[in-house]
Image (cartoon, rainbow, N blue to C red; front, top):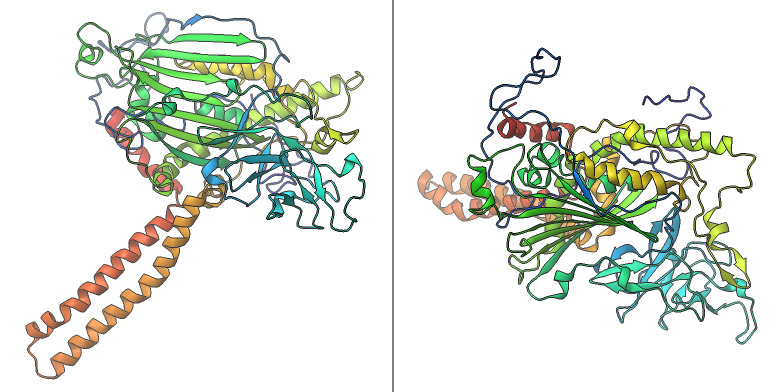
Length: 615
């Protein structure tokens, strides 16, 4: 589909459009490339794995046979005609998924500083999270009922209340009740309008989960058993390395990206992705389960290389063909898991889990968790783990961003057509967050379950050309998105007048400091330390080098022979060298937390494909 950009200046989407940085990104799209590769047992996914020998070299434009179909060289497998084996499929109907009746991972617990309110968006609604000194967490709508100021700009009082920085109103952030108004006499009766909106919160396996419907007195808390946790973390011998990053990418594209196994070999140059892909000889088994307000999708393939065939494929499978299987599992709306299971049923030593949070139209958050049994007694500093992940995610994030010009523009145009055709229907206007969540009803606030206009999703199979056997997974996920994306709360709230979508430039999309360092205390602390060390060590190295040169000149002028003078200067020279090296390391660490992955860096990475594919 070709997107037509408006030629009318008043409708043309500006890079700095109101309410969003650069636009909004992330439609649902063609397989963009996944965020993390499933590693081998003895190597983490970000490291280079041994490169198998490529068995064939297929021409980009193979000669045509008598029937007009491509004619491939002898010994090269022809393109697949086999279809994936789909099992357990149950009907999935549009509108049957209530986005507000699910738990959402808002933050890692370690990313919340006790006593410091933090804002996190969900469905284009601002939420303030507060971690109390006792480890419990609370969540409220980030709006003071007094004058609408952001509560996330406030503080936690000594009594544990959340205090607005504007006029000092205090709230019990677990219930939303207003506990103090400094300008009113104690004991004065106040109306329910003084209360804020609190949401149920729980902490599971180090992640803060929120249920996006208000806390209601007398109503039992939501069932936490539906939270998609990882059983291995409740067992001994496993440890998790965590990473968080926001993206100017839409939830739909990021979710599809972390489900796509085909891109890893090309976008990341990591061969382990090949084990999760399907092929003409290795069909994908796809399990699709749709229940009341639930959806689960799982692909299973033989965990053997597909595009990069080893010299002896049978040896990879084992003597009895009981080799490992590679599994990618999606549980709507936020959970994606990659893991391998050995022939004896034992999980591989490394499991990757991705939680994709829909911050708003064109914005999302990724909580990445690497769960390992290898060196389980060693907990990596989060900032060190981030130095590896930052580059890895940079390799395909801008590629995902470029898809948005097609997918989100098509979705917007379809939404406007649907809205125009149903203008005379009984459906009301799009509900704003304040109208939806701050609806005053006897002092309580009740958000609408689905506050988005219907009819805006696109048919992804019409936008994309799916030919790879692995695309079956993305096709199934795309069908679910087609059915339920229009009912996402506030999906089109901030898109009025946006006729076409334009992705942010590379420097914005890959701004590590803005989207990772600023929201991860460990990385921010490492960055600040590295900057301070560099600022101190670099001048010190210059001073030491100058002192060494002056000492050498002085001793030489006093008649000391040059070799003896040089030997006497060596301690100072060595000190200068060590200080310079330390300053360079500090600078390198600091640079890893800001934008640094340029188009030239990507071009250099892509040269690895020559070795991988012989092309």
